[in-house]
Image (cartoon, rainbow, N blue to C red; front, side, top):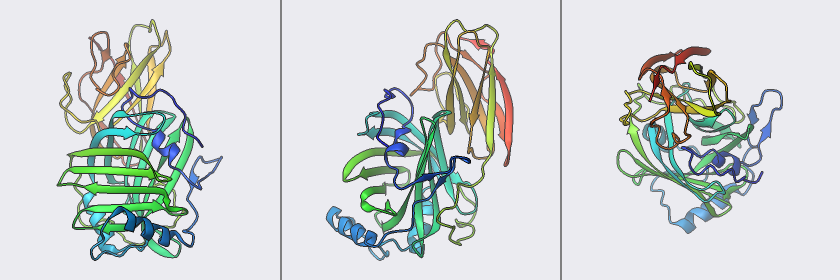
Length: 348
């Protein structure tokens, strides 16, 4: 499916990455869940090794060619958790984006998961899990999400790792590195450059900083049994937030819910873990927003009615906006749907 130019350059995340980098994915029209790519075709290993030689990546003592070397997988699982934040330099038709926040934590005993949303029909999610692919246990980087309400899901597998340089490389399971080539290149304790190429052309760069550490108790995965190659995403909680205000809107406006683990002020001071916006029509006095696949936790919640449409990229309300009481504690339960209501009591 080709990328569409939606003029999203001023928005705080990139959701077109999922749509432009998918391959060989089936969609269950009833459940909406995407099936995985088929097992690795013959020649994928050769493609990966050829491309690896051409780009100069070294592997040290780590096995290449798609085999899930336990040391390489364990190294990545130890390095990846955290709240990663950075701008996206994209060569897609949607252009660049000022920030993409990925809160990487366990979704179950096998999977590290993160998700970022624009609205109910546009999102990007990433998952890391050891799966059975082509008769081997491999570390799989899974990404995709909803683009214009259509689900996309892509699986790539670890083909190369350099533990000394802290660099991991993943390529398309079906079509090899010539189709999708994703490199996670860590630099120091809290810096990452994620570079993705599709069909040999730069797709996006994400130079990210780990703003907050997410510590995991004990080794991960908890159970290193490989998961099926077509396993759906783990079941996760949902947060449903109803925003309310007194005066009916004179014009259509966006409402936002912003969640963080630390207090936010009107001048900033926090890093959002999850956020989503929704549109309220003229005359409305309420708006329901839903955050799916959210990590269970106690969050600080801040809701904003963005009357002048300039919240994206800054998360800072300004004159004319309405806000909830700052940093309302919200407990997202471990299962099911958590429902809360946030009245917007303060007009700026």
